[in-house]
Length: 170
Image 1 (cartoon, rainbow, N blue to C red):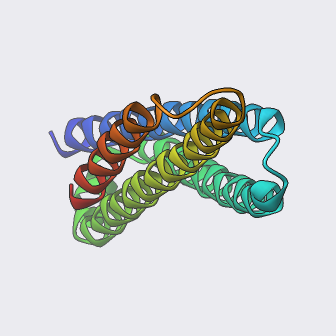
Image 2 (tube, rainbow, N blue to C red):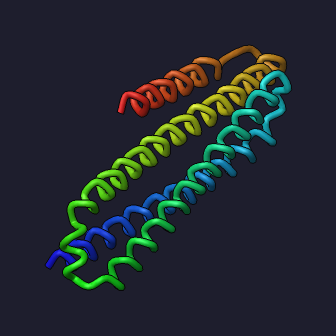
């Protein structure tokens, strides 16, 4: 019965690891989208700042992928141990597995928190790019004709700022 419980725990950890891998892939895709937006942005005064942010996000994604790889390796090792040991040995070691499982859950929690922060940073960077584009469009339209779209751009910026604040408060 404990062997079955250990197998279920391994399956749960595998599912969580797959979920984390999906989130990392999603974050990597979002990071690539952000990089494309930065490349399209002609506001020279903020380009270097956004590039540095993207590089930092790349580094963090790489770090998270490394941690995910380590967690997968550990899961694989545990699965091998569970499948090769007799059930009696598993029962004797169950008290040792409890702290390991607790540590694994804690690591997964930390990874989820880090991914949430990465997502928030990506959202902030996207908003900054959009604000730059709005400023650029407002600047271009003010040169060609008097203002009229400024209030719409300001409303968009206010809406995005509120969404980011809501995201960060979660």
